[in-house]
Length: 204
Image: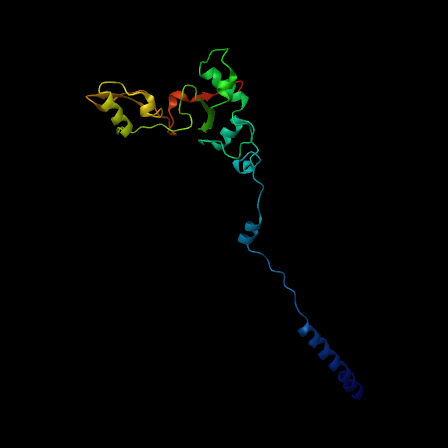
């Protein structure tokens, strides 16, 4: 009986020491992220042919550029090619019906292009055509037109007075300006449609 008592006397302190160590040991818990958090940290790579991948301005082909941006009045920094690519100058020369011996410089200098509905459109200023301006659809006579008609009561008003952007031909009647007829139409982006030509991609 004394031996049993001695055994428990030795064993009990050991048990207390072990229990105390277990209670004081820090427990490491690895948090499990929620489904929303896991979803937020997963960012898939966008397809290489999306518009987002072109923000660095890697386009040199005007047809690929317009197919990507859709509609824009002036090419932006995403296009890295020349002001008037040769392929567009050649296409504009053909589309405008210019003579075969017309110098190509007519379609590279003073020429513009833009995108509408994913297609390329081009215009050359030629004889003072307003490629860089949108159409003027105002039917209210300007002061310049009034002054012209006071000096020329029955004359047709020339374009340098009305402005080349006007879609109307103006005339003077009894010293007052009036619209004689509409001579141009306006496309969906507000430009004179008769001076802008759709340029097909090579091979189309």
